[in-house]
Amino acid sequence: MAKKNIDWSSIGFGYIPTEARYVSNYKDGKWDEGSITDDANIVLNECAGVLQYAQTVFEGLKAYTTQDGKIVVFRPDLNAARLQESCKRLEIPTVSTEKFLDAIEQLVKANIDYVPPYGSGATLYIRPYVFGTNPVIGVKPADEYQFRAFVTPVGPYFKGGVKPITIRVCDYDRAAPHGTGHIKAGLNYAMSLYPIMEAHREGFAENMYLDAATRTKVEETGGANFIFITKDGKLVTPKSNSILPSITRRSLCYVAKEILGMEVEEREVFFSEVPEFAECGLCGTAAVISPVGKINDHGKEICFPSGMEDMGPVTKKLYDTLTGIQMGRIPAPEGWIKVIAE
Image (cartoon, rainbow, N blue to C red; front, side):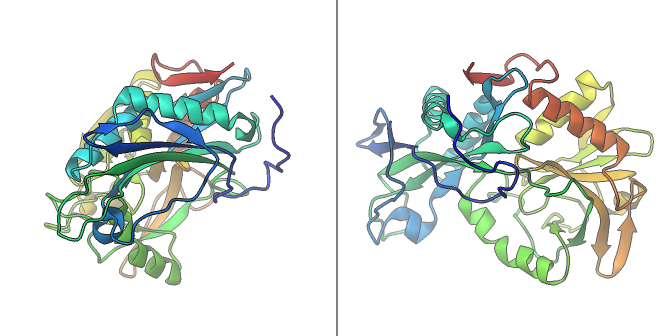
């Protein structure tokens, strides 16, 4: 195995094309076998369902080189299950767990030289997605679809170390109570683009979305779930039917309870409670945990005791434990790690 001649320590979190991607087509009521291709381009009819009515869903996961040199993927079965739920909600034919896992294995093996080495801080990001391909002019689901997945090596989400960020309470709604906030659909991210750019223009790193019905409860950001740490060391995370069920958050809750012996609560979190928490973080695939040091509520600042210099001590322990599992430094719970190559 000869790694690509890439300066792993200098790459950012962006797209770097690789040599292989996976493609499978759905036609006449079934998925074909699927295969690896070197063609990165997609040719679509101008009236394709994905272009007209945004019928597309996606996932995001990573391949890692562990401390003992294995190439592994973290909990891909949960990504498969979440993709299936997303597909069902948008009337897209589901991709079986077996097919999803086979696609990921083929794809990573075909791009094995792009998996960054252990200790580089870089990983191989994997993006599976499904979209409607045939012409659709009436408002209805497509009849034909494509399931694709590509990979790109990415650097650490935080260049120069993890520093707490400042976020703002957002006046826009991310998702309605009975809408599509609980699935990973492109349309959810499209509507978040204006609010996030507005936040950046105002000097904030992210948005805190409140529930659309009452605007009294914490939901999530445009692309990550919240975790809070109470002053007595309890992990609290918001519960709502319009929050995307983060695999990272689910894993952190397990780590907190089963490995670190913490008390964990998944419940409604009222915004009025937020000033009482000791630590705050955003969790997701890209950064694992992004610490939040300050929340701006229309000019009124909520400053967490953990401060703006470093990740809070409990959040740091959670981060170190989960990344240790992913990188093979800490034994993983059964079924969490899929080995691609040894």
